[in-house]
Image (cartoon, rainbow, N blue to C red):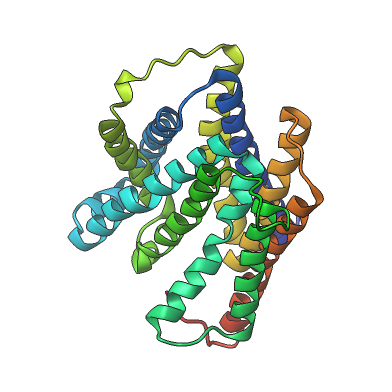
Amino acid sequence: MDKKLKGILLAMGGGVCWGFSGCCGQYLFTHNEVDSNWLTVVRMLSSGVLLMAYCFFRYREELRGLLHHRHDLIKVLLYSVFGMMMCQYSYLTAIQYTNAATATVIQYTGPVMVVMTVCVLEKRLPRIFEAVCVLLAVGGTFLIATHGDPHTLHVSGKGLFWCLMAAVTLVVYTMVLGDTLDRRPVLVCNGMAFLVGGIVLALVTRFWQYHVSLDFQGFLAVAGIVSFGTLIGYSLYIQGLAYIGPAKASMISTIETVSSAVIAHFWLGTQFAQADLIGFAFIIATVFILARNKQEAKDDGTEKQI
């Protein structure tokens, strides 16, 4: 199979896995009445243990090197709490108060927030394509939240807040590691982040005090979040990224938003208005615009490192 086609299929597979994982979360919130505190801790600790076990055998020397490099270790610890933990918690809480598709799509305004943060740090005005992305992201969020009527919210206030928090924490998640990923395998950083973030959140929320009763389908949904949302999803996406590069991989992975909407509709019965679908399209378009311009900047040598 051609490497390009293989990379596309792998990136698509990762996106579909993430979309399915979000729907598993929605199922648990709806049918088992679990709390996002409990579910986030379970996801992070389970994923952290599994990823770190894999890294211990596959990246043992790289893991040892990270633990003995103070500067990178501090960055990964900050990433664990303020990036990974807060991003995972905000996203699952957003699903709890809205639905998987809405939370996933609004979280995709995060890359636009990253661009605006870079503009502030570089003390410059947004370029034309960046300004267009901001307008699309704001317009898309407005349509999803109000269906075009500013006097009516079709998403609860808490739901909209946590959706936007998921996007904001995605900015931290994206930027806090800086150039550490140039020196450390992404699976090592993410494995440690899941484990450390899960431990911190368990202590903060007193995870052991939650009493959750799961039926067989509930256990399968939790397993789906851990396996498809983390292990399988990350593995497929990272392998696809190696074949086609980050710009194309990020564009293709937006199938996560489509897959979560389709799965939520047919599996969970979630209904979407026309305004929702237009808002989804606006926000997804920003990812394509940013990824395309990033690729062009890379091709002509003008790309800057964040």
